Length: 173
Image: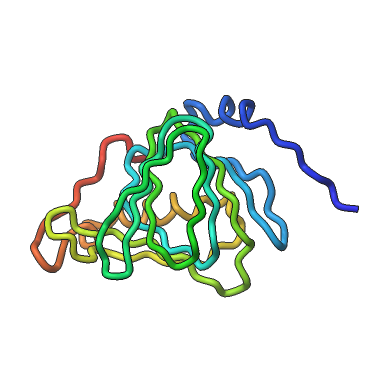
């Protein structure tokens, strides 16, 4: 019989508080992944997940930015204690402060499935840059790795359509 993990959300929030680390993986098994995320004050990309997600806002409020089929940006507000189901393929950007926490549950990705991370120009809303990754161990923080690649490249942060350069935000590091 498999071990059935019991997780203390309060203890996990306390562990993540004030650390540079933004994600604590509860488990990653062949059928599911569950982790707690601490807000990233610099989050601006839209994640296109190849699997469905369920997000539960444990503490604080999340502004879940997402894009409709025609590319329009919408915002769903998740107050503390609420949850949302996000189907695969919907570009979404969970934005909440570093003192807020969410639990995310997903299906494990099949071998070769690709996660995509897209940034849009804040001046003209054209696609600015896309990073992609095959996610293996979620504890490697694929979102953080995508940000390092994006903010580490002036060319990636400069819009081909209007020339606007997205600055590296304070607090990124």
